[in-house]
Image 1: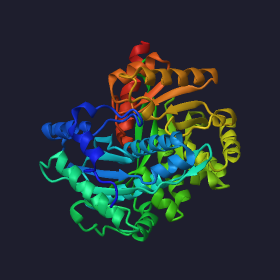
Image 2: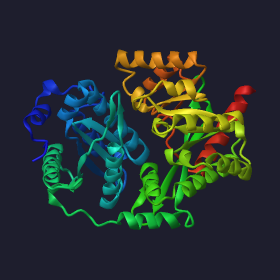
Image 3: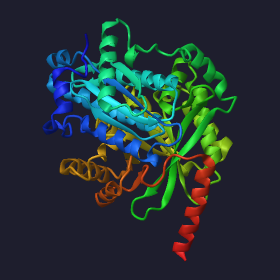
Image 4: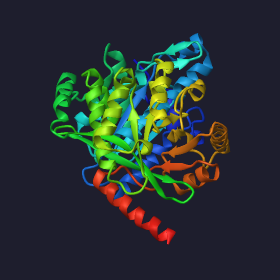
Length: 455
């Protein structure tokens, strides 16, 4: 049987208050935080909106001992940190409601969410997250490949956290016993049929024509004066049966369906058409996927879209992640140089979330470092986190780069980011992702404020 939540070490972590401390390895809280967070959701109606329901998934990794023996303990610890960062980033992108990631001991993580979604939707989220965790992790001596197992639960009304953990633990053990099983529902519930991968791929092929792909905008602000500076475009698929599907799952489905190109062009076109009506010099940030960069015609198609929409070149930012750079950094550098030469700015997204190769900073024509939320989470309570932030900002300034802090959720985080020299920020503290109409309204209101300040 696989690792279960009621193993001795897990039991001790749950029951022994002396061990209820933040897990220093991954920088995320232990299981005690789950009790507090779920209790807060259930006690405050504002935090438990209509149709929301407590969902959870327990993710477990095996072969950690073998990894430590083959690659060294530093590689094993680094792999856990990378997995934690991937889960956090995925949850931020995919989940609409509040969520919490906790370390459950060993190679296990617990993700709980206060989410309004169906069982089918929660299973789709888990499946896509497992895919993300299974992607290769670069280490000094090669690539690690992990095979996660995931137990899922939709909590009963008023169910205790201990009951949830116990049911998840048993489901995870059953998943390990059954060869080829990656996902399992608690209490042996039958996995809902939902829609097959083939059906989802077919659905996506017509989703663009049916206008089911929505573009939301995450506002970005100047840290010095709180002035609105632009927004990042985020894709969501409003599936008629499964509900809202986030960008990560959407692009994973598109990749399987060989539909990345049409999807990316649709999102970019829709975002630029909406953004060209924004007042002032607000910037639009668009994400670039690894699959986008693999297309030889990507640069030409992007310039054609820009001409078609009439969006100003110098107000556009393209965001690339480390994942997009692993395959062929020289090719990516050449592509980004073509964009940069025309006035488009380049941001290195999710900086600090993975095993960043500093060579990227040498060869890429980038203008911004966009910090992953994990670089911000502990800056109000941990001096080491502040020291890391300070070092990154100092390095960025030496390279004439501006720093964007992502995932700002507390005023204290905003104050530290501003004090340490970050230039811009985005996060739920100031604004959540919003529709094109809502962002246009926000932009007009902020524009009026700017005029009154000038007066």
